[in-house]
Length: 312
Image 1 (cartoon, one colour):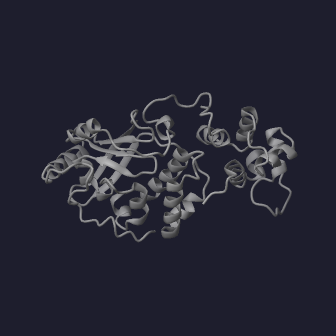
Image 2 (tube, helix red, strand yellow):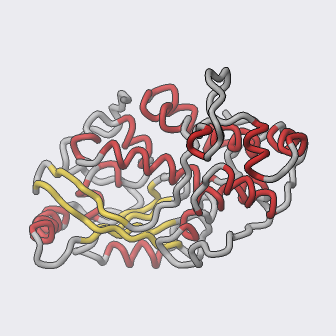
Image 3 (spheres, helix red, strand yellow):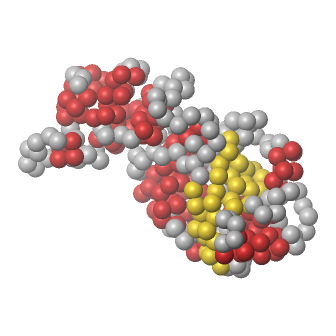
């Protein structure tokens, strides 16, 4: 899926997004290359063309932090993209860029903790199952749902354990109906996946997921080709539920300290809002489920077959 020269590929993809006008350089008429030339990038970064070529071609695998910061400035990278640049250049260092978000739940610290998976602790499963007013999902870095409570499963079958949120988002034909902001959500999800993966783009599980989605979803393939990197924290989920109508839900993300790579996502409605009333109705429906372990999918309360994925 990806070559071993992740740093060079990322630099090349970012300079191809810029034009001389974007960075204040004179345009020299018709250009044979897309975006900035290598020599223009080197000029903006204040390094020699030879040094830049060595970095982009993968001959220099450990450029200094100072050089990386110069390249980030030259390519007009924001803080998230700059942090990603450092991570893929120095994957073992875990360097956090000065001024970036601290280790707090819901920031890039949650989303850059790796893509590994493991069993969800029994105490955490019991905790989320006890919540009747908030939908809760525990997922790993590749968006595999590891555990969820009854209200989350009532929101949609894609939140059932054993499902993958990305596969559901891109391959379930009902997904654009459920998610009122499907296009924006799809773009954010891919940018977030790149941020989570960081230097682990050669992970076999990630390669299998991306390869399968690329074959089956044209929109995924288009978005994955973009170099956009953006860690995702909390936000608002805009849903259109077939039983209770439109839902505007806040969601927060919390890193699970016991297992690196696991994230607890909690959905909740603002008290006193129509979404709050709708969630209460949905919770009543969810409590009618036959009690089963939260690690197994229950009878789907929504008539959406998430396994009949046809792609977009």
